[in-house]
Length: 98
Image (cartoon, helix red, strand yellow):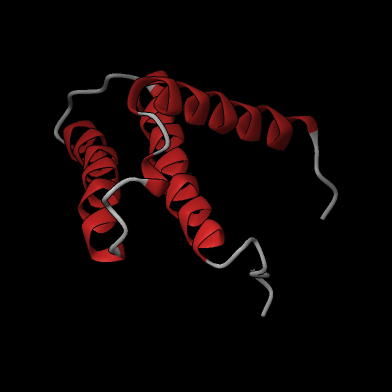
């Protein structure tokens, strides 16, 4: 797959959201929350907001693509944060393809 400009825009938005989260919350990956089961509800909450937008859309309340896109970017950024913490826990040695 050749990465096009749209992919680059989306990944940059995820990066910007990670920066925002870091500035707001600090480096959550190295704090007391080291248990993956403690991180799951955070990701679930973000994914739940995506579900809420779609459920509302199905019921005739449409906040538009901007709101849905923002929630998806936030969800991806939380997943990236979790993946970062796993990498740090393993000294950056993990390869997603294995």
